[in-house]
Length: 232
Image 1 (cartoon, rainbow, N blue to C red):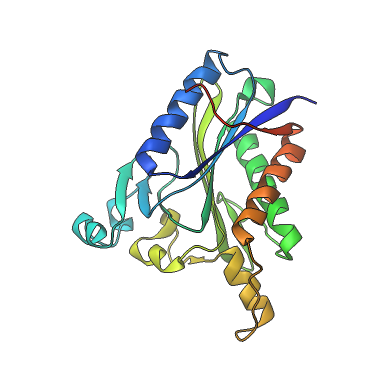
Image 2 (spheres, rainbow, N blue to C red):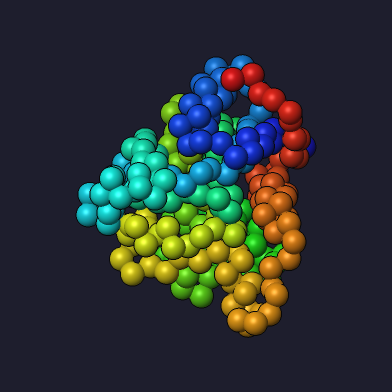
């Protein structure tokens, strides 16, 4: 089975990670990097505005964001406004769809399938919602997806809330969906166990990250190969 490269960026500011993934995507397009790549990262607090973003969906001014230590970026991905921050697993898959299926809708459904499978080992039943991108559990949104592609090579990707401070989503209309309730793996585990239970296992963020990498390999029929660096 063909492998895919997994590179963990650790905690990285959004601008730095964005520049890096664009460089990796350019190398994937040129075939300088011959395999698909999954970049995994965690960001300091940042709000990003996709191509479909509406001004009214950001509920506070840039000045208020700055006071809270939240950066703001307009980017080329699809979708509306979203948040990235500590405790959230962000994945930037650099995938050449000419080696899979040349269909972005197919690709989005595959990414959703990865995320659905990733949270299943933690007892969370996730699902799709017709007409929307991302995954939900019992009506609460657990992960957001927004991608961009050039010459059938993708970048940008998904954001799965693991131990995320969900109050940051109050600063916006997440993904432009009115009255959406955001949730996280930790919040769902706590909800299942009850308010007084110690439901959050140690190293949850690492366990979820490993589950996502394994699920990616199964869904895309690739073998994960962690790497210490990428030429980008």
